[in-house]
Length: 115
Image 1 (cartoon, rainbow, N blue to C red):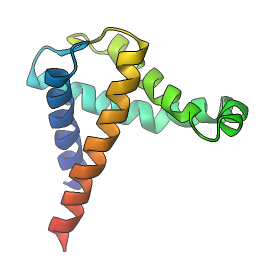
Image 2: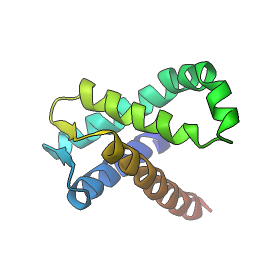
Image 3: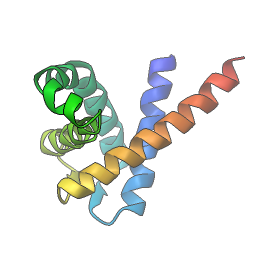
């Protein structure tokens, strides 16, 4: 149940960010939920591989290269989900940073509600 709620909160964040950022479009609410699921799956399976293979670059940049990996995950979701479009790399970078911030804020509110 908690995972389902996290996916819905991520979908809400995707919709809000698509309305704020000019280079991001989401066709419908269903597409936003699909994007949230795809991003979760990519973070689960692809992100650890990318982090492993780019570990030297991540160490040299003191972890800042992880932002690039997050942007690549967003661009992969763009290619996998029709109805979700990101105009370029820097838009994906900004989208991923803002999505992480929104998700951490919403998930912290979710944890406060459990107590």
